[in-house]
Amino acid sequence: MKQLHLHLLSDSTGETLDIVAKACLAQFDEVDAIRHFWPMVRSEGHLERVLDEIEQRPGLVLYTLVNPAIRRALEQNCRRRSLYAVSVLDPVIDALSAVTGEATKGRPGRQHAMDAAYFARVDAIQFTIAHDDGLQPENWEEADIVLTGVSRTSKTPTAIYLANRGYKVANVPLVPESPPPPALYNLKHPLIVGLTTNPERLIQIRRNRLLALNQPPETDYVDMEAVSAELAFARRIFADQGWPVIDVTRRSIEETSLAVVKLVTERVEQAAQ
Image (cartoon, rainbow, N blue to C red; front, side, top):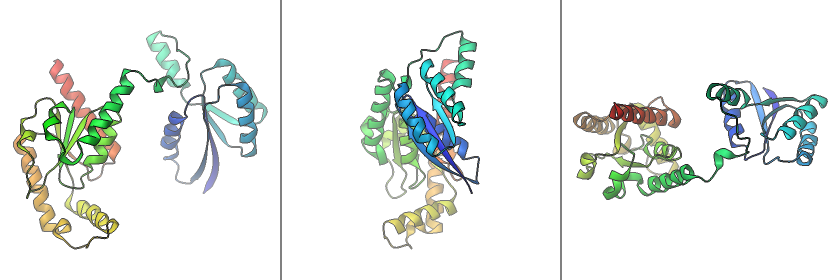
């Protein structure tokens, strides 16, 4: 493994840099990256102190800085100290400016502003947590999305991921012995999406869950025949109701969430047409 010191330097929280770094590092199996975070760098004096620290563990510097003087100071200092530095957002910002004809605002951390969208996202997260696992069916009509499926089909983590993108999500378990409330079948506003998976994969996930809880490993919860019957029960409901279905067997939470967002977008476009 090749070791790399990766310095993430920002005039804001550094969250964007962290996401970009993770996405890029995922393409390199033989690189052991040690990430160093340098957030809220908004003065040349602070920058100088950070660069002294970086010089002791040289590597790649990724940065997001909007102040021209501090950017210039960083670039000049990195050249003088033989440090390789990359501004990760410049190509996208330059392209947006060229296409739209608009100049950038040049304010650090602008994406974290506490505007209406921020509070809508907080509201979505609170709603989603309050309506986890079939809770409060009387409020499901207020949801943007309702996820449903048998136990351990990633309903809750997918709902939380979607909530962080501003969607109000309720999730409803499908259990043959305890059918969901009739309210589920009468919803008008939310998009209802069924989540399903392959029985072998579901049994593996459930076994791991039982082990984590120190529960007996052999129950109907992980019996192949019982699990297959559960999934068939859920599929019949999805088909009878005409709900879109996503197979989560080989999907990450992020991939499942993006598939749900695509369904929401298509629904909005169809309504507009």
